[in-house]
Length: 75
Image (cartoon, rainbow, N blue to C red; front, side, top):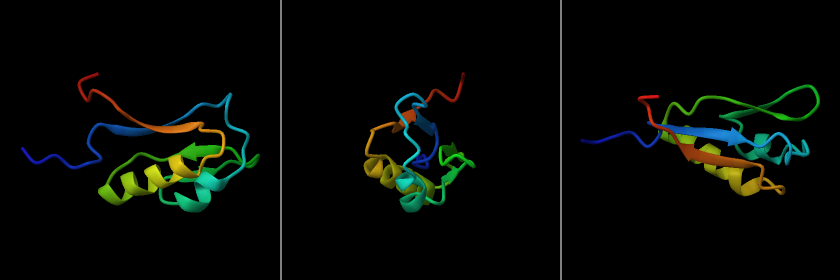
């Protein structure tokens, strides 16, 4: 079975660790928007390009407040 890389993956943020620097939105603009205070608002990962953008956002976060997580689609 050939599964798309985005199937079952979500981008998560730790709101306590996040300081609203905004680098995640600069490099992962496909999946991260910023609210009016500069904190990330995450979009669903719908394509392999979205997953790549999410991983770039994770690497750019200076506080390590973002991560990509695999979730069980049955839940």
